[in-house]
Image (cartoon, rainbow, N blue to C red; front, side, top):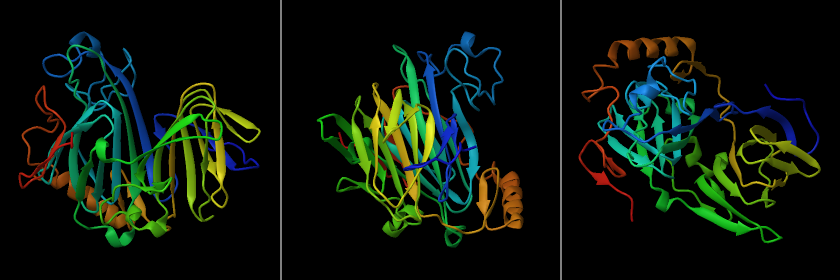
Length: 345
């Protein structure tokens, strides 16, 4: 729940957990940070560190990490998405990906995967412990964006954006203190993000969708230029000490709902700070949701859930539901027609 209404650019505040509340056009977001140990021959944690867990649904941090739904390699075995988009950003660590379209890949360390699941789409997302000579920490943010009703039922689209190609604005404030802004959607400082999938709500600049990852040196300031007052603007302060908006100071691990119709300046505290900005015009259409489905009404959601239950295993083209790549695999994306894309360097 949000805190009390305030004066100034910060309208409301909310404490952050692993799962973030969002506003239309966003659905929700998750932030996974785990201190995985050295990987064994299976790119998995040692048996003595996963014994006694509720494997298959392990969300309790033990030895500094969770297994999530994985039973060998941590992560999320085959599951469905339907009616929305998933933007996945592993700033640290790898993700192995297989899907119902026949695509596969490994991405990580700043890459972005953008999935637009207009209709039923299945994939697995496993977190391999790829290194056996050092720990395998991860820092993975996953942001869900809704799709308008006219795109519900469209064919799923998937792309991987390599970190080397993603625009980053590096700057200094008036006092010479440094910051950097990674542009995942929208624009900042005269730079534009790589294009999202065509059906995305973010594909139309008139929707003012922005996803920014901001890293700030101690004491540095950033100004977010004004956007239309109809835009939902939320800032997520995930790492650091404190942040100041004018005379108001707040501690880390908070979400700030901000005003959109005016410039907003905020100053980072005494530690390095990490901030995410999620903003956009709301889609504003009435929809229904349950589990992995967001569609136009309750009946369409029930029908979709029944379809998933009856067809998900027959629709899965791979031999395992928690499939991951062999040890030593580099970053790549291979589509169902065999075409392969790799980072540019």
